[in-house]
Image 1 (cartoon, rainbow, N blue to C red):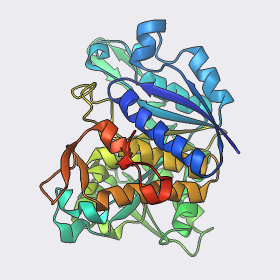
Image 2: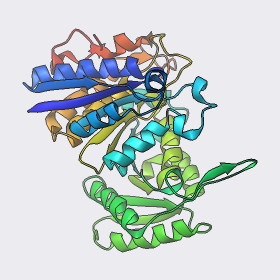
Image 3: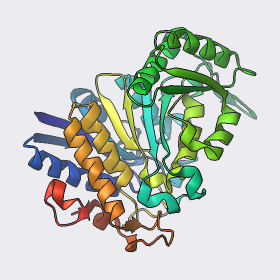
Image 4: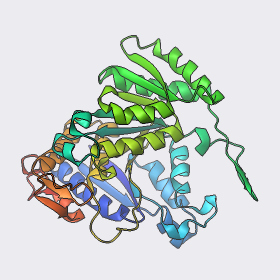
Length: 363
């Protein structure tokens, strides 16, 4: 099998973490006798600097021709004054729309070796394994009309029955293969969009009698996710709520530098860490590459159907954490062997039993 992947390192720490994920992918292809084709292009601020647009046509076409896209991060303070069409983040919205990636999967798992790294009590977070299914191409991010007019601004939240049905089915299918529970999150006591969301999700639920459904307001979900995270299995929600809740879930794990994501639904998926470009540590070799490496594992699973290869990468991550290696973002004095492991060291510490490499994280 040939793995045809487009790399979009982007801005800030994006190039650093993508480079480490590529090393892991290369190790996988060597171990499992796969063929690898990599093509790299500019996106975000890097593309703005060279082409004047955040998503050049050349980049978009390359992504459309690929089998999968591995993305780092976009954005930097220098571009904050730009109007929306010239912001780095706009590239992501366009790319998601053009590739049709309407379903964003964001797993948040508390690794046993990192229970002490969470800001919550170990007895609260231990065993947490949540999958957030976020609708990605609707809601306030894409709704029209929208605009900024002098001292007033407006955005429109808009959803159709068809959009809700398709993302709901993704969540129920995922729950059917996990622990059999979907928590649908909305704000149906205040928003008409959420009233439609709740009604349609309950209709879809009848197609999955083996899956338990509960409906929860987003503000209550935000509280319960902190109070009893182990009670959640699959969280289904719309675009904005999903963006916020998935970042909250990241802190259950000990660091946002651990959370991967897969944006699927179209012919080509986008695989990227949940974290941003972190310009404050860019170029300092401090970034945690595990979220990007875990995103590569999701890519192997969803884009190429390579379950054994995906599990090998995930096991390598688990092993290096068990061995006590830590980058600075998750070091909490919890007995870690190394609390200031660099990005390249982290990426080079690949599990020897799985990849026959020198260490478990990098070069």
